[in-house]
Image (cartoon, rainbow, N blue to C red):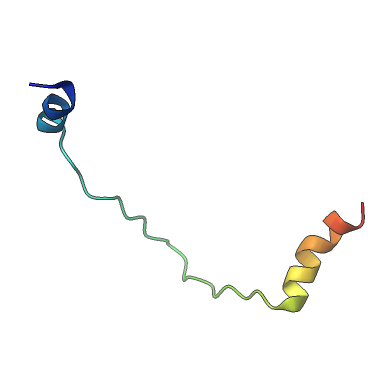
Length: 45
């Protein structure tokens, strides 16, 4: 038996965890003004 087959037999696959947020999800807004204010300090150097 090769090593990969042996590892596959010994490994359990679990489902991905889910993380619930206590806060209501805010809507992300990325309009031109928001992007400009985000990157403007980097451009001013």
